[in-house]
Image (cartoon, rainbow, N blue to C red; front, side):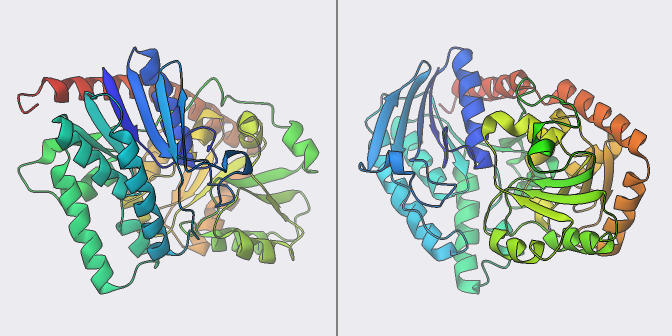
Length: 412
């Protein structure tokens, strides 16, 4: 089957979680015999500017063993400037659409969102070729922008909401990462189209992210040998409640053996650097190489998920699955009843508390750190859960089945 996939990031742009997700999915689909054309941006995420070695040309094409990658200039902008980002993504989408018109007719066109404009490009091309259009939702926009306070103009929000619903109605299938997101999207669709939504969770590479020894190279490099390490690893963005981590660090300032580590980069990093610099028990570290992910995750005794209130309906933290694969327990500050909270409870891999609640967070932290042996046992259960249901084969098979069903539909 020939597949045309639009996504904002792709290897080597792997500091963006969506770049990792789509790269692994495409490789799995290619191993199953599909011919895949990926339309994406030139690498730019980490510094929010096109990487030096990729500059000089507005687009590039490269052949791969499974198909082709078409990369276009991303018109990079400040991540916190929503209007500028919209214009930038709109420019990227226009160029991407023009280049995608030069490929041979695919059997299915799929777009990852956000950005939502890629969905429009995919729909236009799917209509041109009269093939199915699949919309893959990683985060739900504009909901996530509203919850973060980044989008507060009623006029702009109204336009964004109408665009969102229009895109959902035009899609032949919508894939989401969790039941929380599925409920969100169903509430915006017509009542006679609930079967349009399919939950396909992102998988984790269990070979690349495997349990490591606790006292590993990452700990030695950063002076953490013998310490109890509580870590947040991932995008340091506006979606996370780092105030909880600061509160916990202040509360435990007298404990010389407890260190809070923030491993990552993002829009919230400058403010975190400022308050972390005044605390001896907080360490802030840049992203490490992709090859060191297992070592980084394995260095923690306990991992944190800090998603702000209301965001679980529109965003599923992909870092959660990497933590499980690394065999480490979790303290999740996240909406009650969300998928992450449910998995944490049902698989018994940590504790989940209501979001943005310092008292509940510190009480749960104290409870978990008081029993190191149980932390180890929770980590073992985390790895077992990941191995049972978060595999690459399971995700690729789910997409295979979806594509085959759509292509076989009388509509196409």
